[in-house]
Amino acid sequence: MFHYYRNTDLIIDTNLPANRAITITGSRRCGKTYYFYYLIQKIMSEGIDEKRILYVNLEIPTSTKQENVYPFFDEIQNVANWEVFIRNILDKNRAKFFKQGHLQKCYPLNWRHHCEAEQLAIIYILFLFQSFLRLKGFKYTPYLSTNEKSQFMNLYRQYFNCGGYPEIVLYPDLRKKMIGEMINTTIYLDLIDRYKIRNTKSVKLMFNYLIKSKQFSTHKFYHFLKSLNIKVGKTSLYNYLEYFQDAFIIFPLKKFSYSLKKQEQSLPKIYSADNALIDAIVDIDDGKKLENMVFLSLIRKGYELNKELFYYSNGYECDFIIKNKKIDCMIQVCYDISDPLTKERELRSLLKAGEKLDCDNFIMVTYDYKADETLNHHFIKILPFYEFDFAQNIRIE
Image (cartoon, rainbow, N blue to C red; front, side, top):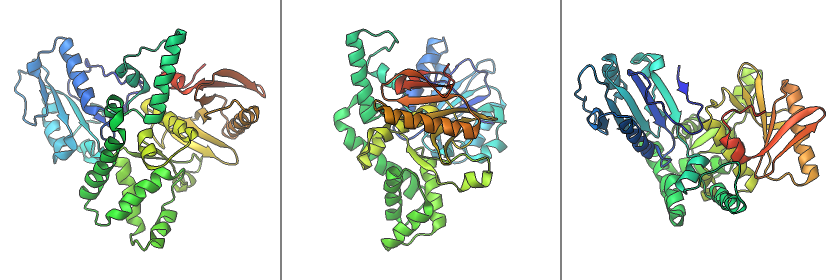
């Protein structure tokens, strides 16, 4: 099976045994290559000879059998049959591989035919708020002075509004240009060119439609295109949605149901890889931005989309539920609950949903409000996004 690291700082243990392949993947421009640089520096700081490290070179490294080598393959999905090459090296127990790419093609299903399951680890890289703070030279602690708190909140607002793509963080004045280029590159290279799509207009419209949608219906979008005299089959639209997922730019979240059929037929809620992508397409409210950030935080913590992570709606709504063998946690997102009526409505909706799913672990994530609430003998932890994002364990006592 694939191993998903539930570490909010994405620190890889470089002392893992040899005969191990680690895949680092995520959307374009999210910092995968720089994370490679970090890992290389980390390995060298642990005393590994630089001659044993190979980066962006698909030739078999020369080494003695007593020494492990550390190859780093950047954008490996562009190489045909890469899994056969890596399997041959792993069989010799001489290498620990680090691979990265921005497509799910980085770990095709036929990898299982070439590599034992436990030899593959998947890491989704999305730029964390903690990483953003480090890039800005700010070290967060729970005990900040008044001036430090003010500086922190300013940085928090910047991350909230502009997203966390590293280049945008470093060059905020070029934000619109960079996001536009990344969207065009994703649409043209990762979808249109890669999959030989002729109806390019339908792909562009679908991306905008997905970003603007709270929920997505392929059927409704099909009729929307039909109203514009754009002819495209429903099967193609289902494929396009999968392509956007494969590029790690769109994440469709299904509604939880104990009926697998109903769950699969539910309309997915749509989230994107970064708030900057949403902001480039549509002027969204702060509540939508915060909900998207909480979703990304849950993905970074390692919860698998539509296997462990869902939304719930059945008379009462809950933005996110975490499920293992049972419902472990229910999470509601509300930007501002300063209005008592809003606060009571959101809390009651969360508790009613919890009654239906037999769950008593409740979290409400806000922009900056923190409190411990008790309603109808149920405890609800209310905390700002940054504390939620920093937490290692989703079950916050």
